[in-house]
Image 1 (cartoon, rainbow, N blue to C red):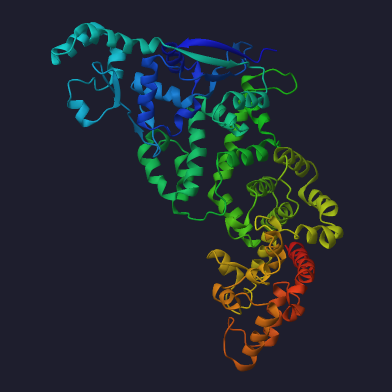
Image 2 (image 1 turned 180 degrees about the vertical axis):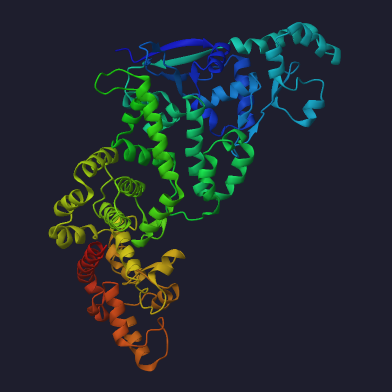
Length: 594
C-alpha cells in the first residue's frame, strides 16, 4: 500500500483549508514557540524563493454517521504547526498564543526599496520607507493603490522597481509548499516511523501527541478539553500561572473547566508533576480498561474494533469517556489523596522516584478501586503495595504500554487482591528477598530504584540519620541532605580506583554533613573508636550520641553490622555483602508491613 502522497500546494490554498476546517491545526491552542525574528525569516525565505520544508498531515478516517451517511475525515497536521501558525500570523494577521497563553499579534514589516523584512517597531511604524504590516497589504490585494500611496510618501523611490517588489511580495501567497499526506489506513506506529525519518530535527512523536492532536481537532469541546489537560500540567509546576490563564484566555475561563483546576494555584508540592502524556495515559487506562495509546486514537476516530469501520457514535462516546477520566484525574480530592498515600510509603520527594509510569499506574489503581467501590482503607493499602511492588520489580521499565494493558485487564477481571497476590508469589518470593534483591543492591548508582526503596523504608520507620539521635532521614531528604559513605570514599580511593567499587549502594547512608566532615578519610575502625571515646567522656565529636545502646540501635536502623566498628580496608567487601543482605531484609519487612 502506498503510505503517502506528495503534492505541491499553494500557500493560499493551505491557509484557506485551515480556515475552512479541512486541515486541523491542533497545536494552534498551545503556545507559539517561535520568536518574531523566525517569522520574519520565514517570510524572507518565501520572498526569495527558498524552500521552507514539507508540511505533513495525516488524513483521519471517514466516519459513518447514525443515519448511515459518511462524513469525510479531516487532515490533521502532525508536522509544520509552527510554520502554518507563522504564516497565519504574518499573512492573515491572526493573533498567536504566546508562552503566557496570551493572544498577541506578530506584525512583519517590509521595505520595498531595500527588499528587507523586519519585526514591527515604533521607529519602523513612523518611517515612510516601510510598510508597517504586510498582512494589511496581502489581504487588501490592491497593488495599484499600494504603489501609488507608497510613491507619494517616498518620491525618491523608483516606481517601476517598487511595483516589481510589491508584486513579488504579493506572490508569496501563491508560492508552493511541499505537502505530504499520509494515508488514512496507516497505523500510528507507521505514522510515527515516517515522521521520525522525515523530520531532520530528530523530534520524536509519542502516541499521546496523536491523541492530543485528535482531541484538539474536534471542535470547541476538544479544544477546551485539550486546554484543560495542558493548563493542569502547567499549573502543577507553576501555580502562579493561574492568574494569566484566567485573565488571558477568556474563552476557556467561561467554561466549567477553569474552576476545576483553580485549586492548583495554592499547591507547591512537586512529588507528582504530570505532563499531558501522563494525564492521557492514566485517564485512558482507567476508563477504557486498555493500556495501548494507539487504541485511544482509534477510539477517538470512531473505530469499531469488531467491524473495522469508523462510527460517529463510537467517536462521541469515546470523547465523553475520556473527558470523564480526565476530570477524575484532575479532581482535587483524588489527586491530593493519592499523593498523600504515596508519601505515606516513605517516598516523600520526587528525587526518590525513578519511574513516572510507576506513579501513573499507582494512580490508575487508586482511581479504578475508587470506581469499583473499595473502602478507603483498602484503597490505601493496595495503592501503597502496588506502588512499592512496582519499584521493586521495575515493572514499567520495559514496554510500559503492554504492561499497563495487562495489569488493568487483570485487575478488572480478577480483582486487585488476587492479581497482586499472584505477582507477589511469582516475583517477590523468598528467592527474591534472599538472593535477587541483595544482587540488585550490588550496584554503584544512586539512580538504582532499590536504594530509594531502602531510604523510603527508613522514612517509613522514622529512622534517624547515620550517627544521629535527633535528625531524621526524612529531614535530610526533605532538605536535600547529603548521602555519604560508611567506608569514606577518599579512604577507599587509596586502594580502589574504580567508581564501581567505592560508590557501591551498600556503602551509602544519609548522614549530617558535619558528621561526614569529621569522619573525613578515616577507616571505620578509627572513627568508631573515637565515637566510643565520645560515649565515655561525653565530649561530642560525631553527632550527639552518648550511649552505646543508642549507637548500636542506630547502626541496626541503617543495616550496618556492629562488626563494622572494627573494620579496616580489607574488610570492605565483606561489609558490603553483609549489609546488602540486611538491607534486603529491612526492605522485605517494610513491604510486608504496608
